[in-house]
Length: 74
Image (cartoon, rainbow, N blue to C red; front, side, top):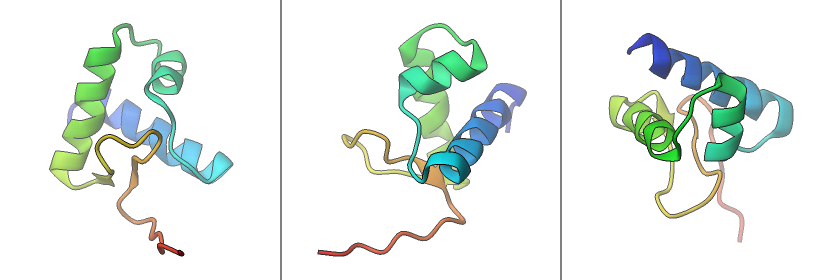
């Protein structure tokens, strides 16, 4: 994991602890000082590829650390 990916992972983890849902790309951009939505999105989904985060593509704020379990209630 690169330092930039680790910084984004920490933001995602802390955001989940504070709010109970994942940050948007804009939230991550603001909290990390990164510029460019595409760069942030690519780094966020690389964390999913690495297995440290999980997410549902096409769904806003779905990214979360892998250790958080979510039960689907319908």
